[in-house]
Image 1 (tube, helix red, strand yellow):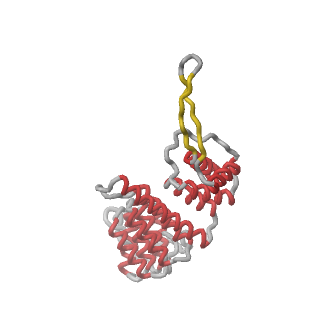
Image 2 (cartoon, helix red, strand yellow):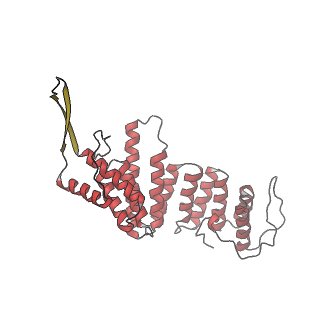
Image 3 (cartoon, helix red, strand yellow):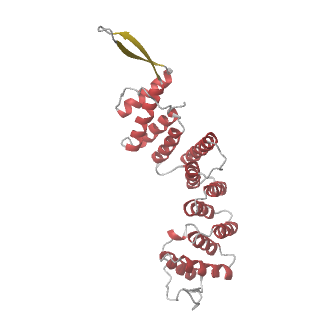
Length: 303
């Protein structure tokens, strides 16, 4: 029976759970009856998972794998139980065994990426698992979405080597975010149900990188799917304001005042090219804003 979704997503089996849950080990369990079919094993496992009895679940499905070592479902359930018990290496081993039994199924790699990222904050491992997921199922938009999100997690949380400088960390984070945007783009090509969300993610990543023009383009694409999306509108205002500030060069001067004092004057000069000017104007038409650029831009736009 092929495992297509994580245990926590499975619907309760219609098989009667009349048999007492088997294999109650250690302080909680004693063997009373072994399930007789895969459906019965799964029904018992689901019940233990719903009760969040991870120790009992691990004991049950470990016995299942011992009796049926070629059952991929059993290894997947064992991996999830070990993940919840925070047994990193044992969970990875179980996921890998499940994947070996189902070489064309991306689900074990999807579940491993989620486990490593959420339970262990092992973001390098999560990225690696998601990368394998895309190789196993390259036409699966969900796999590319998984990869993008794990790359974002790695960019935001590391870990980075203790000896890494701030410049090195910033460069590595930038690489992760650009790779994440490529993965989101691949998912969009394959077809997704909510493309506006994807364009917002892409825009936000470009904004973090200081690539204001690309961020503006992406926010406008997001708004083409939902013109009222407030996240997109706010992001577009932020990025167009930043680009407008980056395009404005200020100079100060001093002129005499009638009373013998001095006036400090300030003038501004627009320094960006025609396409950039047109982009700012287009963004302002969409958002209905035309704000004076900040006199102290914080170098938010690098390009």
